Image 1 (cartoon, helix red, strand yellow):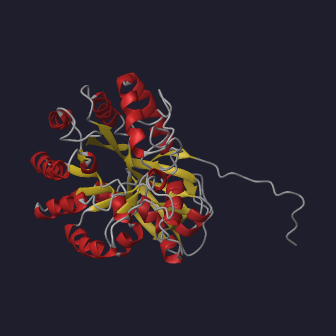
Image 2 (image 1 turned 180 degrees about the horizontal axis):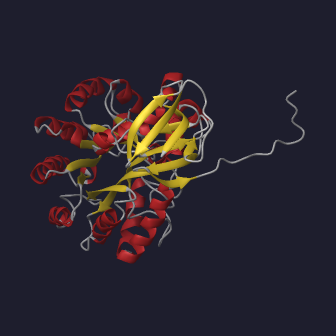
Image 3 (image 1 turned 60 degrees about the vertical axis):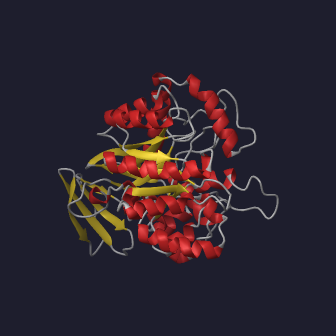
Length: 417
């Protein structure tokens, strides 16, 4: 396969990309535009990017909003209650059907890598079993990491630790936690130590729902970061949400950032989810309810964006479009300068690859697997501004999606002359 007249991120020229046996064999700068032959794919000056990555989603809960009841308050904790009502209705067929529909939606929007959380606060562990099975079945089409996620607490939920142990034996890739939802501060801290202990014992990654609350006294992030630092796990550890950081005072945050930078852990923010779930106890002024994405990014601490939910008890919207999430995030986090726009795709591509620990097989570089997408636009800024469609998705040298750009007939009352 050969792709011609393509633009690469942070480059002005046009390029030709040669693909042999599923790998990039050459990437050559063009001196002029080339007329495509029958065996070439013409990018028409559009942007080639590494594939989008969905680093934080709950596939086992996707497409369940309103079943059996709607989250009328829209709050995080009512969402957990509604999910507890839905869990008894779970079965393998139900989960498989919804997950396949959601994965198809994500793939149609340029996603080729997914990290999904699977609820371990369920004695049947049907979500864990089904997601691990689907991960293996779909491996030649999309790469999925499964997180064992103790929704109701690793130590507070009856038999929670034993269920996590069973989830590890079933085959989860990542150990999760939710320290702010444990009954006490002591249990929250103990859960973080236990998560790191399990990760070390079984050589797993870590991804914790950490401080997803507006309480400025919820400070389990420092415990997680310290455990990652002291056990030399660093980039294998991720803190998701960390919305309490938006309520921390600046003096504490200044001290905290020193630890975060030294620890080398990753962060995931879910802007569309957090902007509506958080700040619920505020009248006015009302907090935005997000972690300090802009400050983390400026401090060169790895941070990326995820969707979190698609039509589930916590978020009754969602369409699988990470570009929409990125657009929301840039607005909410006040990252609206040109420098922010010019590298913004990092928040749903390269930074997410670091979070998933897949950098060795990710990126548009000679010698790496030829997995990429073609976006309608010439650079990060133009793609984000017009929410450019994914025109082409190629995985390991095979086309898995091809889309024709929409054509609009100009109204006859417009005259540009």
